[in-house]
Length: 92
Image 1 (tube, rainbow, N blue to C red):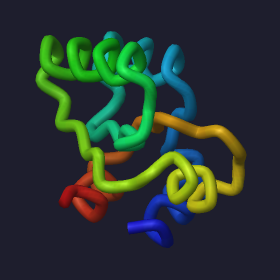
Image 2: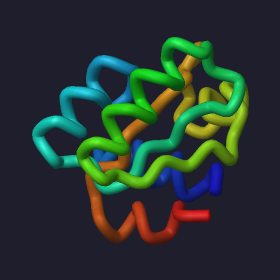
Image 3: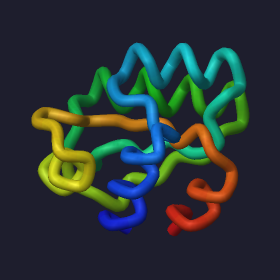
Image 4: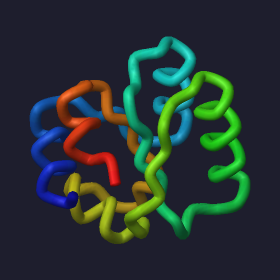
């Protein structure tokens, strides 16, 4: 999953961060959200509520450190996948 996520990031098919992901969910341009299982309760609630409302699948298979390492940034808690093909590869 980490390599595929890194590949999607390099292909510019990923939005990073809570607010950017929520905005992308609202505009229906995200096919999958990857949420760190150790994210804060408030971040989890925001993302899960918005994803549920707009019927977007959420994966919580990675920790924040694994997510950060996969895309080469630090402190990443949530990313949105904007490509259908990559979202199919990343689904658990």
